[in-house]
Figure 1 (cartoon, rainbow, N blue to C red):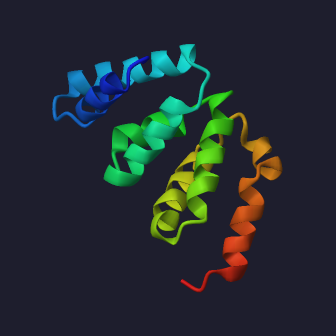
Figure 2: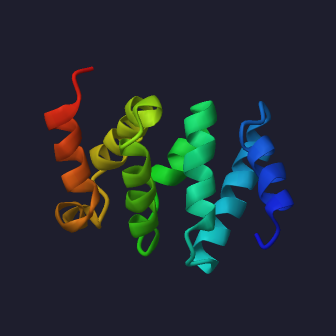
Figure 3: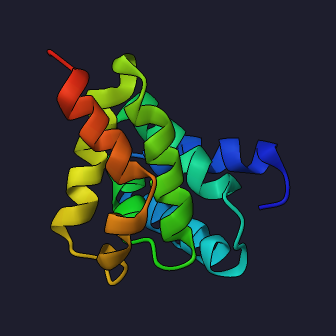
Length: 125
């Protein structure tokens, strides 16, 4: 997924009403996540999920494996501090944790944990 335009086109097809198209696009995303170790694709999927609440995007994000766990936790940490996205991003985090990923032990050392504790102490909503 070298070009941003391709990612945009794939995101548009990710929520296709045609199940075959959706499955094919999901497979392309998973293949690219296996070959690309950078954060760009994970960040794009998180942003897309926050904008659309896309169930296929949620499925991809909840099944991420190492090394993308760090990218996901870093991106969640970025959004936890913003009141406008806090509820949606905490919902995403809840979905991820519920599936008990193999990297769940990393949550206690992630910068996300202090951010969550800060939100609990400070947030009145």
